Length: 361
Ligand code: SF4
Image (cartoon, rainbow, N blue to C red; front, side, top):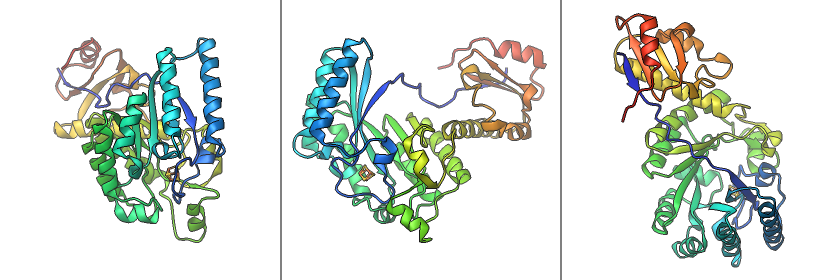
């Protein structure tokens, strides 16, 4: 009865990350697009003060019975913090892991700041995961974006993270100066081939006060429009999901401080949902095409009900074009999709059987 298939998204983790923002700390320069102080709403701060504040906050959380949390050190280049601050922050988080408040410790960093020796010391102190800001694997785009590292550094960094026994995350930034859809498709393939545990996709935006803003105002840079960014990201997440990578962020969060400072670029209040819905549409469309016939009915796991039709139901016509108008789609408490084709039984019969839980390996 019909064709059964799964959504390729790896099971989402139940993560509660308590971010600790250290804007620009450890960064050797400023990448053209970067406005970490706006994005995080935190001004560059003295590291000793940040460390003391974190201890107070963790102690208060423990006393109040809050948590447990993952701690994430973000906003700068954690593994290149001056002196032994990376070790001190990690050890502090490690201490609260011992005390039951912290479950996991992660940080973000640059590819060229992934010294194997330091990674292994940090691993020993309690670091579990490193998210590498790869952005793109295109050497020219990295250069124009003022990154100061090349694609080889990304591969080296990923290897070093793994060899230190740490989990790997990757961040991609489609739409940087000179970046094209084709380059992004290649970036996604390369990212998937590195098999990170997680990925983030942040379509590039122009924030006030950055060098990118000056380039934009001088007519030297045009960001991707919302449609291009959403289509590219939808294609990207599908490739990453199929490779078993959890995509933990797509675009800026609406409450992100950076959103208010964006002067141009793809900022959509529901970018994540928009992209996920389009990726799901592609999945259903490809499945229908692969089977070479127009589908007549579809049962969808209820967990996708909120995103299936797309933002503002933008995908209704597309589904209707596939042969799946509203009345031929049902949501049920099942784990898999079931698609029925012409001549495969009556609607009532199909829906009642497809809505039974099915187990598929
Ligand atoms: S390395 Fe990261 S945090 Fe530092 S300036 Fe560049 S993008 Fe911003």
